[in-house]
Image 1 (cartoon, helix red, strand yellow):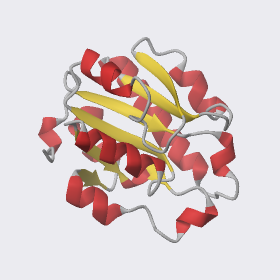
Image 2 (tube, helix red, strand yellow; image 1 turned 180 degrees about the horizontal axis):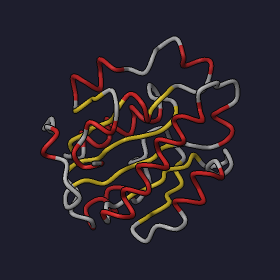
Image 3 (cartoon, one colour; image 1 turned 60 degrees about the vertical axis):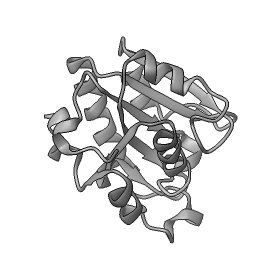
Image 4 (cartoon, helix red, strand yellow; image 1 turned 90 degrees about the vertical axis):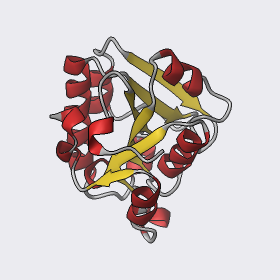
Length: 171
């Protein structure tokens, strides 16, 4: 089901931050703004007690330090390592989301047309609504930049806004 703005609440939504690892930012110019936005979301999650999950690709290093430092201080936070683009494949992501009674996922991360989109597809296949915004996803690797951010796909399959600040969950 495609969520509406008002459908995203702290009681039924979890934030998933995907692959915000140093390796994926090589050659990426605007990564600071994306990280700043994700840090702001993490702080809101901490204050509103919104579950937040960080997904990291195995063997690709740690999350960027500024984001990792914030995430480590959040009580309702799970860190999951993955071996595939889809964060649901061979991980405990589904179990974690259902333990929080999540019905929707808000996705943020790097490589919007690869790992973020694959995890979005996994969310949909597992019965979760998806949402994201232009200012918290991007394609960091040069090979993915030609695809843009996949805005049309995200808008068709879920809730897509220009800024996460448009979503009442984060206000």
